Amino acid sequence: MNHYETVFILNPVLSDVQVKETVQKFEDYLVSKGAKMIHKEDWGLKKLAYPIQKKKSGFYHLFEFNLDGANLAAFELEFRRDDSIMRYLTVRLDKHAAAWAEKRRERVKSAKK
Image (cartoon, rainbow, N blue to C red):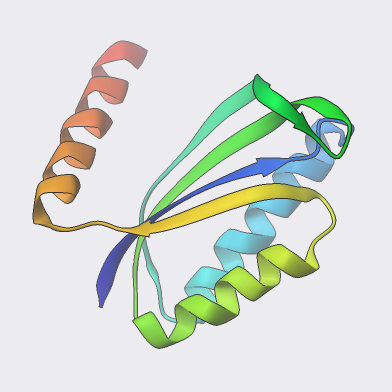
């Protein structure tokens, strides 16, 4: 199982309920394929660096998970099929990036306290 991190941008015209449902749909899909969810973050509504589909902002979300590499293509296919997803990027984390991600999670936890 490889360690992955996915950041995806949802369409800003979605309601809060639709955003939560979409995020939950992708999380459930990962778990159904045998992924172990390590961490997920809601970065909220952010301004885009450039317009995408004539939109200037989007809801950013991050998933960090362990998944077999064979199932990753099917996961990304689900992103391409969903009209509410404007962009996504999945990267495989090596041991150094995974350590950095752990430090980032700790900073997020301490910032919330």
